[in-house]
Every structure is written in structure tokens, then in C-alpha cells.
Length: 241
Length: 241
Image (cartoon, rainbow over all chains, first blue to last red; front, side):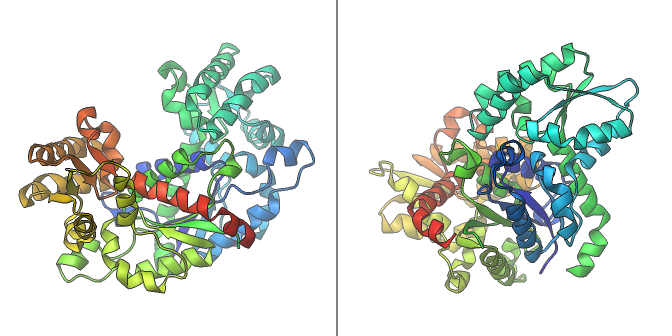
């Protein structure tokens, strides 16, 4: 079985495509065979993450673990999951993975750290599940970086419906909602806004440029981390080939 | 193992992403779980198709068959391959597939047939490998539709370098080359131009609108056929779930 980058996607499907687009677009390659071999599991039929976190709904954990096993059986030697909310269960599924599973917040922090964080206050925009999980806030605190999450009213009136609209492929509806939510965080003192839900960057190129310039695209951070991982492990990958 | 649509991609990687984008974009879905579950094998490390067809190079057939086996083991109940040239080996790999393998030219013809073909002359633009394989020409002839392939000079100076540029992610370079190649076929009497290489539609939205309007996007035809197949077999798919 030839070694591949495993992508645990499907949450949502368009966010997965956006991730794959950025992965291919940002890989330095002049011809097909220079690209990273990838196996993508994009199966959105799993219990709703938000209902599991907030409403005692069925857990998606068994399906996530099944996906990891399928990816490994198909040759995945490293796995990335372009969905922030599903990282709520990271501590539960990661120990059973037989290969490295990149944590999306680690890859985002690595990208943010490469900038100048002195005096920064990072706005954090994501699903209520991601905000509750706290894995971004914990990492910001460890670096003594101030963090500002979307206020509950804006979460309910702007961010939640924007994510829902993107999942329904209504990008025109989502765009002004995200613009307003970003604008509000900036007005309240955020120096940048971390788009910590992979649905949000799907419309990043539709936002007003002056707002988009302040946004940090976590999907790009994850894609870059995958490219970096693959390049660093290329010799190992080729040996096992 | 839950049933999935299998995508045999990687030839090239961006054409695969373009296919997945069209698949998700065109699926009538309001929420994640209404989308088609997909497993994507995008491994571009296989022998060069053009060298195999024209220069006695190693055949990609064993790698294609390995990919089919991997997809089936991961739950694929139907397979589509968003690459025209690799259909050169369709008659050789298809019999060993345990699940339906949609032929890209059949899906393109189904899309074209839904239009009015009386008096049509279809321009055919693809790799030299696809043109040599003849599976489009054969299907056009069976429907008594006139067909005009790109002349050798234009193939060499416009189409071949355009495909190479897209594979190197240089879309700006590819765009005017494809525009000129489409224009030439239209000047010579084609009523529409079939973009029978999945790299070509990657830049379709960059073409001058008056030229793009005459192009038939085979990637969309394949995506629509997959959506149609999935909808028709949904009950079967759910039973095996």
C-alpha cells in the first residue's frame, strides 16, 4: 500500500473541497507526480457534532474512529481533519490512531506564531462547539496572547447562521454575516480574527478586502502544515513505498 | 463499511479538486448529511499516461487497478475517474472492478444528448492520448454527430502547453491558449467544443464569456452523472449501510 496523506473530511463537504484546493494550490509542484498523494474520506453521514456537544445527542466518535481506520487501511501515514468542531473529540480518538494526527489548532498556532504577536489580541470565530472545547483559548493563554471570542448575540445572529448558510451552499447569504461578525470583533479591539471554522474561509475571497486582510485562514494553516509534514517525512514515505 | 462514491483521481490533482467542487456544488443539499459520501484516491504517483501511450513507457494500468481495489476496500459502491486520458485503459481495468465504473465519455454524451444535436458539429479538445483512444469519436459517430478535433498544430502550440500549464498551476498562462484553441475550432465550423480533458474546465470561468458559452464541461457531466447514480441507487445504498 503506497503511503498517502489521509484527510478526514465531510464536515462539511465544501470545507473539505476548500482544504483540498488549498493543499494542491500551495504545494510547490510543476507536474502531477510532484503532488502529495492523498486519500480523502468525506462521509458526512455521522451524528451532528453540535447536538452531541450541547443536546446530549449521539456522539460522532465511533464514526470518526471508523474513518481513521479506513484511512489507515488505505495507506494514510498522517491524518488531517479540516473541521475544527470535530476536534472536540481529539483526545478520545487520537490515542487509537496508529499514525500522526495533526491537531488543527496546533497548525493554526504555528502559522500565527510566525507573525508578530506582541500586543496582539486575537478574535476567535468558530462554532459554539469549538469555542466550548477551548483548545484555541488554551493555546493562546499558553503563549500569553489576548483572545476575544464572538459575543453570544453575534454568535447567534451572525456566525451560526453564516455557517449554516455555507453548509447549504448559500455563499451570498453567508458573506455579509461574516463581514459584520469580523467587523464587530475588530471594533472591539481584536487585531486579527482567527477563522476557526473551516466553513468560514470558503467565502474569504468574497469578503471586503479590508476585512479579509485581518482574517487568519486556519484551513490554509492546516494545508501548509500537511505540506510541511510531507516534505519533512518524504524520505521515510518513499522508503515505505 | 458504509457505502461511498469512489473517486479515482490525482490525474491531475487540481482537476480532481475541480470535480469534487462541482460534485458538492451541484448536489441538492441543505445540510452536511444530505451530501454524497465520497472516498477519494488522489495519488499522482503513477506512470505518465502520455509516455505509455506514445513512447512505449511503463503502463499506469497496475496502479489504476490498485487504486480501484483500495477504493472498493474503503467502501466504494460506484467509481468515477475525473481524467479522460486514463480512460484509454478502461476496457482493461473495468472488467476487474466489482462495482459500476462510470465511463466519462458516456456521462458526457448523456449531457450532450440532452441538448439539440440536429446540425451540430462538436469540436473535441483533449490530450493526444484521449484523441488517439477514440472513445469520444466512436460515440459521436454512433449518434451521427459531426466531430472536429483540434488540428495537430493547435494541439502542439495551444492545447498541450495549456494542459501542462494547468498541471503546473499556472492558470494565467493556460487561459489565452485555451481561448485561442476554442476560437479556432469555432472559426472552423464547430458549434460547441467538448472540453474532454478535466484540466481544461479548471480555467473555464476565466475564459471570455462568449467562448465559455460554447464549451461543454465534461467534469460537470461526470459530477451530474455521479449525483444521478447516487440518487437512483439511494435505497440500495442505505440498505447496505
